[in-house]
Image 1 (cartoon, one colour):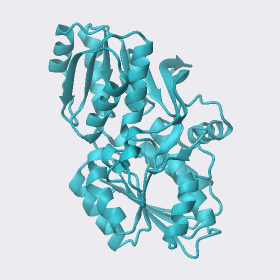
Image 2 (cartoon, one colour; image 1 turned 180 degrees about the vertical axis):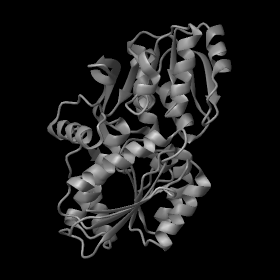
Image 3 (cartoon, rainbow, N blue to C red; image 1 turned 135 degrees about the vertical axis):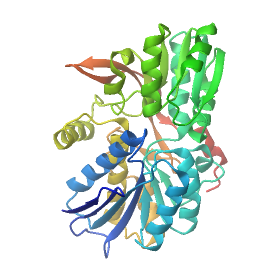
Image 4 (spheres, rainbow, N blue to C red; image 1 turned 60 degrees about the vertical axis):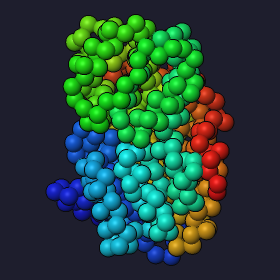
Length: 381
């Protein structure tokens, strides 16, 4: 495999061996976050994706990776350059929902496929769904809906909820409230990229909350948990897996122990594909994979499975091959609903320490295998 990297731009190009179904090479453009407070998320998606490509022996793929620096305008510029200059057949990689909303509608209208390894904003699952848009991770609301259901089962009756003020944050709080039966001690939207949570913690302290729900991915979650640990508050936290996974747990330290969170994947998930993935990822990168890495890996394997049976230039055939989702997902059972978002099981996880390393273990199931997002009812496709 030939690898070329330009660190200043975050550009990586890879060429892999000849494939079975495609008549010529396929160009995939990955736009993801490789710098700033959200870099860990993008790095893990990229590394999971790369691992799947490296394991493949039947593809002819050129992968171009660029850093969006978590800026919508940068992501839009990169997408247009990849389509016009790189002649990309498929785009992927975006972490943040505000960037996805800025990029995806234009991309799919240009008859380019976009396969999301992470961001799943509700409009793209509902009224703004498109035949060329697929999400291989989840729809934003779903893991938070599972957290709301889990809060009920834990007996929480007065939860304080908080998320950043951008599309995924709105989806997060709406999703939690959709299933949560208790009262709200407070509801806050914070700033994207915020690092000081003193005022928010003071509001939580002054409320009569019996629990906290947060969605604060990347560096935001690290900052909150460090300050929360110093505050002396001791309310239980329930969350979704994005805020308490391998990308942030080492930096959070012991304050994250015992936090209950929800996810469609966990490193201890007992299936053959996942066991092989975790082992290979650790061997390749010398760290445990995160939920983001698992999504990058699944996204690449979804694309590879479609390329095995259809040429990407035959849009209709390739679209049907993607819909078939004929690959071994690390989450186990995987299928697409009519809105091209996953039908899957969502687990309840707990942050634990194993051999000196913080990680998650599955302690229950929030939703069974037939679970799908509510926004598909608004998708006319």
